[in-house]
Amino acid sequence: MAWRCSGLSNEELVNNMRRRIHLPGGRDYLSEPVEKAMKAVDHANYVRGKRDVNAYDDSPQSETIGYVGPTISAPHMWHAYALEHLLEFLKPGARVLDVGSGSGYLVAVLHHLVGDTGKVVGIELPKLVTVTCSEGNLRQDGLGRALDSGAIEMVAGRLREGYAPGGPYEVIHVGAAALNVPQALLSDQLASPGRMFTPAGVAVHAGDRANR
Ligand code: SAH
Image (cartoon, rainbow, N blue to C red; front, top):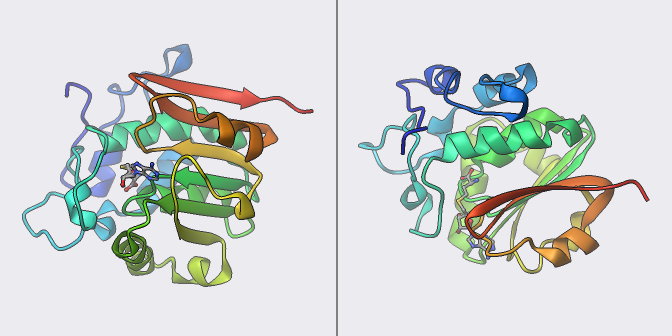
């Protein structure tokens, strides 16, 4: 894929997004908060059991979280793109739902953006090994305290159900393949105001919920 941004270190991976990312308004570099949060999370902590995998390669690595499942071809670029679109709502103290949390990598980046007073819930298909693995990754990355305090919560669940007990969420990010905008999440679990970023078939949809 032409827009990959692989590197030999976490720093290089994030730096390589410059001029490869295309953001609204023609910006081709990451905002300071997103760059800082992405640099704070070393992707190597989220790649398990495969010595031959380059943790800083911008290619699908779902097999490293315990199974092969639907994933995205250039995950770091997708993550950066999503974070930039959601940034306005990723304030300290915000509640965030990450659907398809996989390795827990994006959950960690989101946690750095909303801080200890915020809450990030990651939901992943009900395969215990995956949730357990992602919690292990987060602890390995120094986020055990955030898990213990509830600032980060990893839950087995599905896109169609979301996770109502943690909501409503100011931000919902859907990293799982979705054929349509998940309407139930939009109407029942997104706060007002709030913003959802989701794939919808082959398109990407960023939608706001206005203040009621
Ligand atoms: N952001 C993740 C990677 C996302 S890959 C990370 O940082 O690691 C997409 C993930 O969505 C996969 O782990 C897949 O298992 C999960 N997924 C696919 N369909 C899903 C569904 N219906 N509900 C919840 N998760 C789903």
